[in-house]
Length: 67
Image (cartoon, rainbow, N blue to C red; front, side):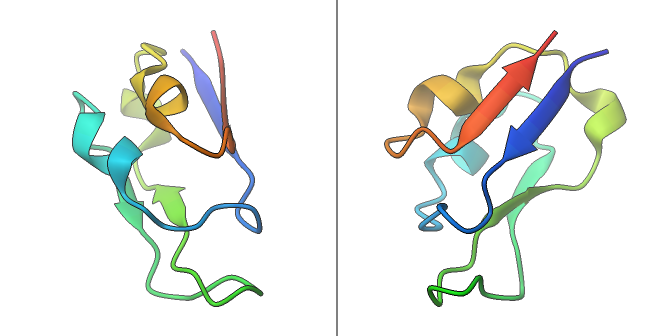
């Protein structure tokens, strides 16, 4: 199983990672971070395959995937 680490405070909530996730396990949070952005969150971590599409797509490099 893979694990995803998201730097919530650095995320600007662009949603690119949400769109490219093949398992559709990412979403934008309903609560904003300290900068006022609705950061991405993972809601089904057990379904992550570790493909790292989210990390590759992130323009701000706030996602780390460990396999």
